[in-house]
Length: 176
Image (cartoon, rainbow, N blue to C red):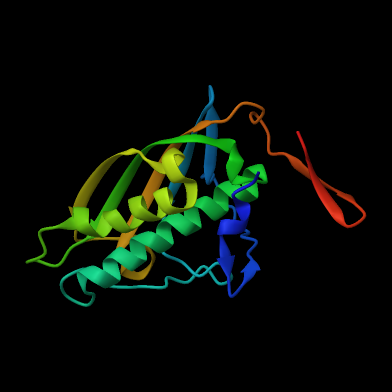
């Protein structure tokens, strides 16, 4: 059973289309391990940041937590787009979270919990992971509050190429 239906916006499944940046790619697969480039909390249609600013200055820790949760959703949408299903994730292995901290903010790990909690909520046990969190004061994309990159182990039956969706009347099948 696919977990793809967990990611919804206003009761509808969302389709994420990531722009291609040369020479960077959003997902790199090597030997059954998948590396997903860092993503911030962005609108899936416009790529505009949903949040801007430093935690402890322009944003509260709670807003930072929500921003990190949006990072998880954005990363998982990228994986869903690439492989056709979140079932491709055997296990999230590791995450690196960069948190944009105000001068007096000393708990970036509490912000990164938004990412980790959302991964577990969506993927259950497969979403548990090792994690590194770093505080910084300089972030891309108009000063986003958090960016997360993810590494996961690929499930059997996926690999080396994205599956192709084939229409069969009312049903869609994933062809690998």
